[in-house]
Image (cartoon, rainbow, N blue to C red; front, side, top):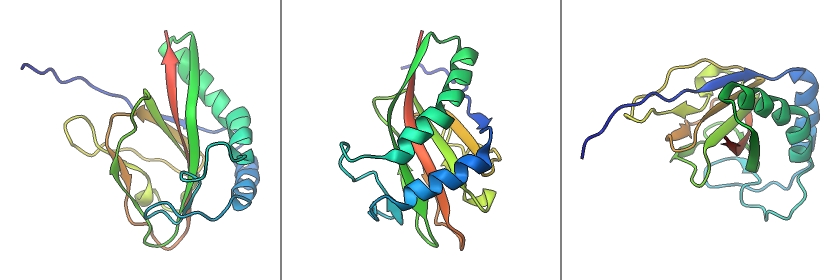
Length: 170
């Protein structure tokens, strides 16, 4: 079998009016049931899908919608959708092991709380090399869903992300 290396891109979008969204989203996430997911301190990943998620309703309409429209224009896509979404909170020592996302084109991570860039999501390219990038609170990253990624053991201050899967149509 012959293989050809191709480049993948990671997109970083700064969310407009981040401080306003941060306060509202954190309040809505605080109202969610305290469910632990594997080695993550708190997440709604394991909560039944029919359970109301007001934070996602707000996030999709007031944050993600603008970013997805921007990406769709860049990709020259005629439409897009979000397959599912969830939040994760990490306290000291909590982490998420290497994984990828199936049955979707892109994975997206919104850094709602990121006290230190050193604890951002770590992503490997198709050759297994760590992708170098810098983000801060209020940034939303988008990358091909097949790429392996993880969250290393968290530091002293809490980290909160909202992640979602997305597809673009041409």
